Length: 153
Image (tube, rainbow, N blue to C red; front, side, top):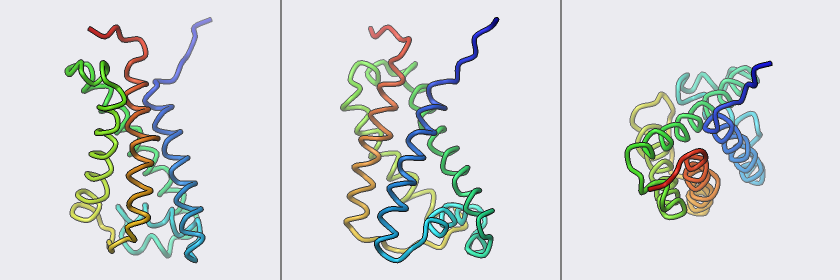
């Protein structure tokens, strides 16, 4: 019987997205926001403000969109690591830098300038948490997963 395994970038992207969304829901619940609203805010990247009127359907779309985004972030690191070997030779340093870069590109370039979402300035505490999460739960795992099955030179 053939064995089926999921690509590591898919597993890593899913795990990072679910953990990050749980953290976001917990953080924003302390500031009066619901989990549904947090998830709708991601759907708003594509749908715009109408996402907040879409109920759990738009919240589910937000979950899928964010999982897809982080899977793409993971897959991109794996692709780049095939061309730039330093990315697998120095996984903590390169992964941490990649996490900061990924966070900056997603939330300070793409979302505010290329999405339908209406953005606002967020508290510095939330930004600091997000950068730390992207370093520890996105960037470094990207680098470590990219090393699997690769002999570093």
